[in-house]
Structure formats: structure tokens, C-alpha cells
Length: 243
Image (cartoon, rainbow, N blue to C red):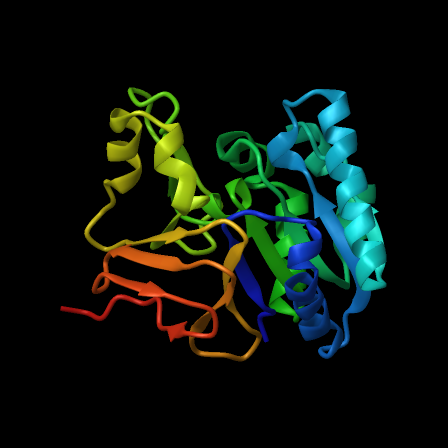
């Protein structure tokens, strides 16, 4: 049975998200996984050492708050994703969390690596997998190049090939020019585009058929399904019905 899968708009490791992150751990522990919280900071791999230390400490504090073991995997370059020590650390962990940063760097670092294969295998046997911001964007088949709009999209990790996520949705379009917004909003006809607000997630629990919204803000269905806005506790089927 696949484990729980979460797409988070923002807020990884923050106290306000502790209850939600604990629920992902609990989902997997109930299926026999070890109470370990894997931090995968790859999307921030191009940031300064001070910022990388900040994310590491933030994640460790969250794990301590929840009462589980934190394992930080310093996977910043592609060769790190071939390190067998990192690959082995994934096995049987309850929660694997890909945090925010640059989605293109995250995708190109992990795609077709032993580390990504280990993540998929662990998730397929009941572990929870969460992606926040960049970590949510990479799970589609492609990542639009909204920073360099003339560049082609980056190949994604393809776990959710027909779902595209705009994280930080309640603030995102204040940060980017109109040309970048057009890139993000343009999706193939067979894709579902969702916007996930900050401090909010949409999760498909292990064994569940539908996704459910968790958090203080909203999830916006923008394309591929009827336009709608979902609040905490509301469910939705994120599949496109055949025409």
C-alpha cells in the first residue's frame, strides 16, 4: 500500500505545522514504519551554508517537538544522491520530507538516482512522502521555468504526472511578473493545476481515494477540474474524467 502523500504550500518544520507533520508520521508508523523524520534539503542546495544550517536546525527542532528521530540528509549535488549511506537512511523511515527552494535543482539532482528509487520504494510500502513548495512542484511530469521564462520546462519526478502545483498561492503572484505568471498558469489539457496557500496542505492518506485539505488557508482548483476553492477538511478527487 502506498503511504500518505502531501503537497504543502509552505511552512515546513514550523510549529504551526507540527500537528500535520505528526499525522503523516503517525500514518506510516501505523503501517510498521520506524519513527524517523527524514529531511531532504536538496532544493536549498545552492543556498549559503548559514541558510542550510538554518533549515537543518529548524527540521531537527520540529522532530524533537513531535517526539521522533530526525535524520538530515545533506543531498545538495547530484553525486550525493548516489551515496549509499543516504540511500540506506531512507529505508523504513516514516516520513520523507522534501523542503523548499529551487524546484529545478531538486528535480535534476534526484531524478533517476538510487536515492529517488529508495524514496519511491519506501513510499510504496507505507511511508509518508511530503513536498513543500519546490518539493511539491517537482512531483509533476514537468516544472515550468517561471524564473527564466524563455527556457523550456524541467523534467519533473513524475510521481503525479498530471498534477501541477503553485505553492505560496495566496502570495505567489505578488512576487513574480506577469510573464512568469502566464508560464505557471499554462498547462496541458490533460493536467490539473492547483494553488496551495501558505501554511496549508492537500494530502492523500494511505488507503484513501480522495485528497483532503489541511490548514488555515485554502487550496484552489484552477484548471483541469471545475474551478473551486477548498478549505480545511474538504475532500476532492484529483483525477480527470475521460471525455
